[in-house]
Image: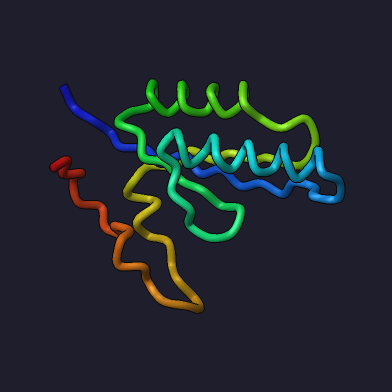
Length: 106
């Protein structure tokens, strides 16, 4: 069996004008973190998936837990494509793997 690692990227822009909107924003962010997403930057989260089937399940789970209003977008790319992200400004975080090497679970 061969694995083709994928990466699900969730990008969102949610309104925070009222207390109910702030609550929806917080619940969605906590949902992402609780389900293994890592923050790339403000309002951009990613999660590693072992294959396309797992990737589709992750995306369906995000759809089920989306907030009522705002903009939420998802992108599925291969781990190799993800590793080619170019950092134009800023520094690489040492806790995030940015290579296309195989995943090692300790």
